[in-house]
Length: 122
Image (cartoon, rainbow, N blue to C red; front, side, top):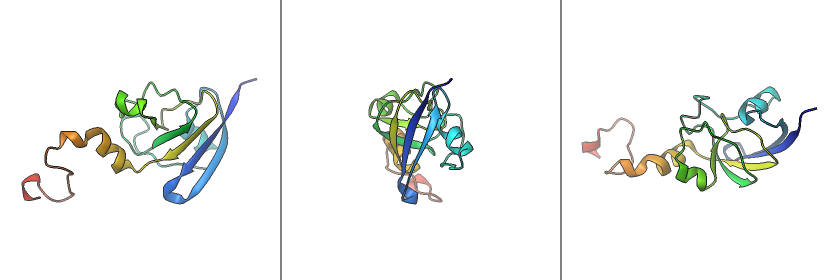
């Protein structure tokens, strides 16, 4: 008999709160999909920030989250595509651009990159 944990996602962009039991060790994104609630994602490899969340309660195992710096992980950010259930968890979805900016914004010396405009025309 495998252990399951209640995982609650506050999906800000949709104004929804979804809770499902996820078997320990299963990825949260895939489990929610299989239970009829697909959440935002892009790469499924932990390399982008499309499925980024902020942990409100609990902890997650996300050793494969290459798309998040150790600093952001320490601040409670996670990637649901590689996050595995280890206990009860409550998270809130984040805007992909916000998390990307937190992680990489300092590398763009002239501020945010605007779509369609070269850096020297901003």
